[in-house]
Image 1: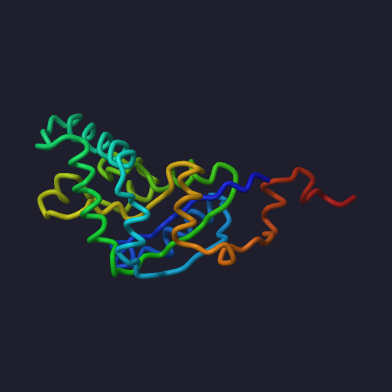
Image 2: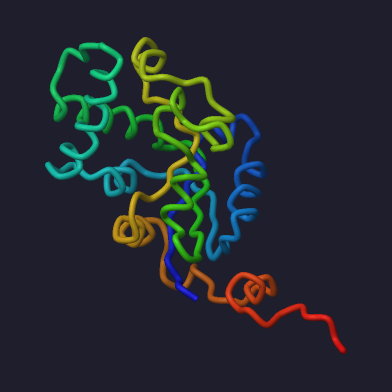
Length: 197
């Protein structure tokens, strides 16, 4: 069985809305296996490692945000890099010293399934059935008007490589458990559950 892993974080706004169980249930129903979980109040240093102060992160994040504004005919008043720096600053403020639940989920296509389950970063365009599509009425316009980060409810790693880097920030190796689930036979083998003759 492929053991791809993804980092899923339930953000403070979701904890305040009592959505923890709903969200965990969605990943369980997908067939992913929870191999690590903890609630912490992140420090500024930890959040800074997760959202690094580097050019690559600024270009990647800022370009997506900039294109989102432009697709709606909105002039954000700044370029992609400055948008990303503003986003990072707001994320640092939002996630520091507030409870966040960090989880490691494992299974085939864990990152792609995690992203699909979370939905588009902009909740207004997230598919119905996804976490953001079902549980959010947020928008960039609303968050900008309030001068805060957009409430995306959850974080999901973008790729297996990104996931491994993020997991290393939040978990020690010994905190991630390796164990069997009975349902793995159903998911990953073919000769289970046959009628006995």
